[in-house]
Image (cartoon, rainbow, N blue to C red; front, side, top):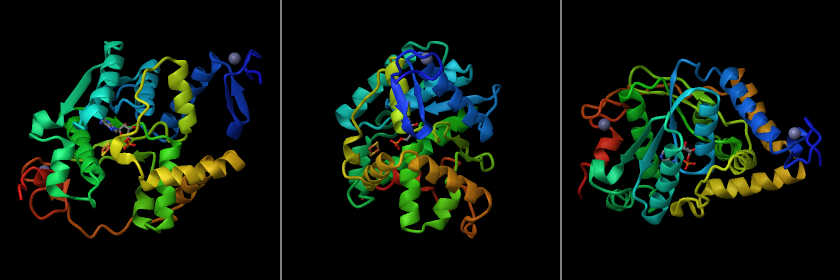
Amino acid sequence: MKCRKCGRPAVVNMRQHKLALCEEHYPEWFIAQTQRAIEKYHMFGPEERVLVAVSGGKDSLALWDVLLELGYRADGLYIDLGIGDYSAASRAKVERFASRRPEARFIVVDIAAEYGETLPQVARRVRRGRGKPCSVCGLIKRHVMNRITRDEGYDVLATGHNLDDEVAVLFGNVLHWQTGYIARQAPVLPAAGAGLARKVKPFCRLYERETAAYALLTGIDYIYDECPHAVGATSIRYKGLLNQMEERSPGTKLQFYLGFLRVRKEGFFRPAAETVELHPCPNCGQLTSAPGLCAFCRLWQRHD
Ligand code: AMP
Ligand code: FES
Ligand code: ZN
Ligand code: ZN
């Protein structure tokens, strides 16, 4: 297999694009694809300040790297949830990456230091989500990402979600016909008033395999392990099924996702009518539909 650009031996073969590239031209292609998505979906401009949520995994570190390569004003945010060795190891990867990019600011929010308990501790106490701490984790991450984006004056928050992530979520929502969620799934979630930051996913059209290849070829050191709580998650099962389909017909995932974005744009899925009033939480100021404190602030109040 030869590189389409220069004819030297290719290191990445993308059957879904009928494209093979060498170690020099693959990262170039990957960076250009990211820039195209940023422009196509009007994610942000060169003057805007971007906060990249970095987990220590390949996708979010690759995203931070690519945005800096493209010359964007991109800083990093790591949320330390205190999940034993997993958090310690992932934090070390992000710190290492940040130390090599002194031009970018790096923010760490340590949940235990700031709120008094680690994620496993608070999840055990409130027992949400049928024993798995993932729903509490999601709530904490969303809240903290939004708070830092808003308080530190960033224009937009970027996450490392890739095509495989987006397709697995879409597949799950279609299986259960969650039309309200389907309508809200998009490469860009616009800001809502002063309280909710704009959120973007610049890798939403790039396969997980492609982000992994970029990280590998550019020498980004990332954590391979998934969070220990993710074991057995339905999204991982869906990814397995989708990979089987992709194996048989390369391009299935991309077609499914791009087709979805097309019909979504045509107004096929309507968001559920917003019957609930949102108001700022009296404690933290983030918008909530709850009558009093928001769900995040309630987490730290309940000691039952
Ligand atoms: P996940 O929900 O683990 O699939 O992660 C999705 C995206 O959320 C990642 O690509 C990151 O952008 C972001 N993210 C996940 N965990 C963290 C974390 N601990 N700190 C900051 N960002 C995170
Ligand atoms: Fe949140 Fe695993 S990363 S529960
Ligand atoms: Zn080449
Ligand atoms: Zn609150």
